[in-house]
Length: 436
Image (cartoon, rainbow, N blue to C red; front, side, top):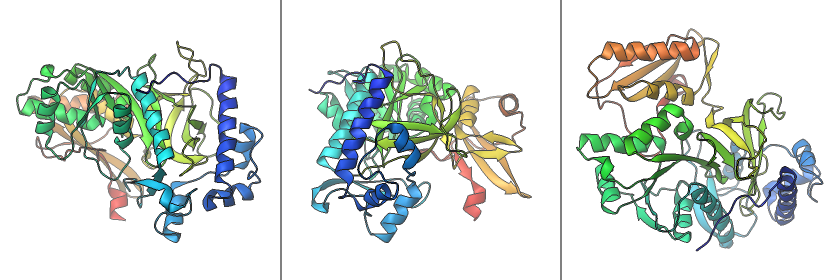
């Protein structure tokens, strides 16, 4: 069995020294084998390596998803961001395409194993141990999803329980019958399983789940969503985030629920102002920019993730770990933030409002354009036992006004009428973009 430990760097200085060393080894591997990054590195004069992280930040241009997609369109099917010959690659994953054309991602055995080891770290930080039984409540599609988590669970000696290709009800029964102790799924689907259990009159207290590891959406670090999941399952929620194109990135801080810590032994992380591209101060929000240090087969240098985060304090946690803290996890996406009458509104804050009021089974936020301005309305599906719809609507409007100083129109729809999702939810709908 492979055991994992805290970050190998006990001081902030050592974190950065270790990152610089790994970065230069990565550049040595990339040049001249990787056509995409060899050209980038030569253009900025870094093909021979970097003398400091600051030099890297100042000289190395960003990499964007649009740029990678265009490269694959120009060089079908996998683009030029490949460091090795095609016959060395053994895995293909693909992004969801929710923000554009899907991106194809190839991995060698070595780069896949690097991502698996990052997931081993996530499991370790979550307190998962040999003897635990991990249920994966999702269908194993072409996205990275929990594929690496599955391999990491097996590598760490946990019993892996597949949950693909069956109904939600069948998954609940399998969780109970197999005495699963850990559930891996999206926050939305954790709530959906609890909803199905109520509908089918299944008592979730029969389940032995003690930890839910959630990913794919911001909900795990959204206080109201987190509280709702923990109440439904009688278990602890542990948040995590990653991306198909870059790998498993973060784990929840054991000291502070709702705070993610970046695995800085594997990633160089920057939190930058979206306009000035300068580093933000602790307590400020910016876009998360990542450099993967161990995925040499498919490297990403200064990748603009599009994730909005709040930089945490630089102090280590109680165990002396210096991994970068992101307060509130992934707050939103750059392409999801919308200005409603001068107020920037994000999906995670709307979700916190919706799940802070009892009586909401599900909802859908619809953004459209009227007379040149963006407007929002919320479709709300009440729970079957909600007897006072007017009280529900009034409570939501009060919370929205308190949070945003806005009046958000709310339409109540029939129970069960809104779609349910196994993976990433689609509660945030831009009707103005659909129309275009």
